[in-house]
Image 1 (tube, rainbow, N blue to C red):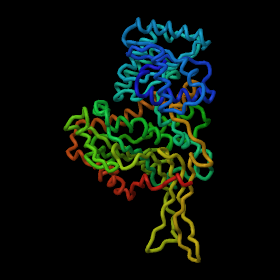
Image 2: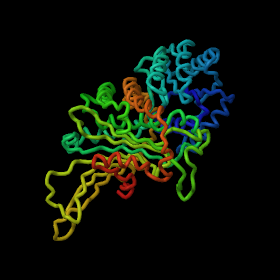
Image 3: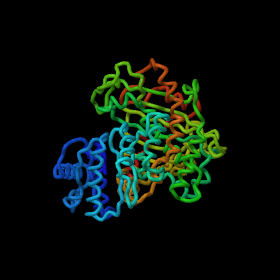
Image 4: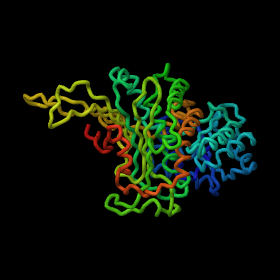
Length: 488
């Protein structure tokens, strides 16, 4: 059951992903109930699903057969009679398609309704099933730690923790999942994955788009809550976690939670030493003038909301003591890119040092989007009789000859929820610890007006203060557009 079935997420992501699973034979016995306020017939809803797959997916054979399994229920999320009618429809479909009483409730709608829906599902007996029941929830999970606790308490009245699947679509991306493989399946990396050999790690997620029509939501959120609390901290946890005893959901989650517990809290005046915030101004994107954030629709003309965050995270444990993890994320930046750069320490004595040149550090770059792949930066001898070292790149592209076209993140996560694999979903402990870390920063920023806003031009890579954050430690941001894995 997809709550919010007439929304943008269902149209662009969920329907095409379900179809891909169906076309691959990974979705056999099933029925889908689209739930939303709008009045639609089953035929009208099925036409919408068909158009969605045709426009946003790769429609092939059996599309008509696929959409025939979709049904529609016009619904009021606050009305018990509406849930009772939904329950009767679910029972009919369960019997017709022989689904063994298994139900997945996907909440693809405004987060303020999450708790209300969960409580009604319990109260109106839709969770009384003979098979499994699972609740899939989109971010944001709360607005801060206290609101997250209230929401968690509400949904736990109807679902146990192991039945709750909190989606972070970054965790469905192929190269994010590949972080663990790169680390734990390669003898050349894991022995070096510590503060003896790594000088710093940089995680960048930049967007070229502005807030567009999301101004009302973004005013309440900002980049810190929208990106750092979930996507950025999740990637850091995968990079920093200890090797799990086994590759099971519980063991991997346990190690990620240990990372969050080891995060050094940033409190009070320390926030200005460890974090930088920005807000985009006017600028040029693809030779087109774009407005400042404060000129966007439904945005306060004197808004104090950040559209950019850069931060320095310190993980206080034996493995990572002294190694900074730098993160940055923002809108209206120069390039759309998500990349991780692991910079290794210089060797103790550089035999190939020349006064007129420097030997570049070794880098491992994990490309997450828009391209997917890995680049290893090494130094090698130039052709000829001299002994000068020159940088070389070893590239692997997921969309190259040796790789496969990776599934859409939602396709992967939907398949995991069907199979009951919660490894790539966030546990409550992760949510609570990440909110407690972020809330300290929010408390300072929300109570202090940033008079420099807007402080970076659209089409740039953020405010100058973000560069100074690294310069103070003797580092600099590696360019996100530096490496191109398309030519592997």
